[in-house]
Amino acid sequence: MKYLPAILGILVAAFLLFMGVQKFGAANPVFAYIATNSGIELFEPVIRLVVGVSEIAAAALILLATFTGRLRGLGALISAGATGGALVFHLSPWLGINAPVAFAPGGGYEFSPMLFMMAVPFFALSLVLVWLDRDALLKMAGR
Image (tube, rainbow, N blue to C red; front, side, top):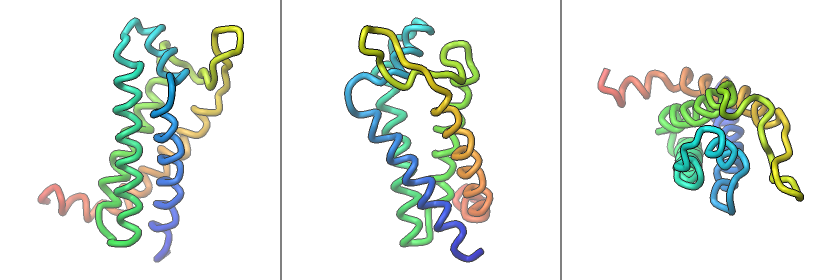
C-alpha cells in the first residue's frame, strides 16, 4: 500500500503525457470534429492547446510528487478535470462515444470508441489519487 500512490501516479502521468503531447501537432480530429459539430471554432486549435497544456502540467505535478511527495493531489485533481471533461464531451451530441481517432485519407474521419474507453479508467485512477492525497489537498485549501 505504501507504493500504491507512486505506481498509480506514474501510470496516470504516462497516460497524460501521451495524450497531452499529441495535442501539439497538426490539427486533431477530435477537436476538429467538435468544432465542426458545435459551430464553436475555438475548439481547434485554442481549446486543444489548453487541454494539452493542462494534461502535461498535471503529469508534471504527479511526477514531481514521486520525488518530493508533494503536489500529487493537485496534479490528480487537474487530471480528473481534464479526463472528466473528455468524458462529458464523449457523452455529448457534439462528439459521442464512437469518436474520430484519425482523419480518413479521402476526407472525413475514422471512428473508434478507443478514446472513451481509455478516458473512463484514467478518470477513475485520477479520482483514486485525489482520494489518496485528500489530506494534502485539504491542507493546501487551508482546511
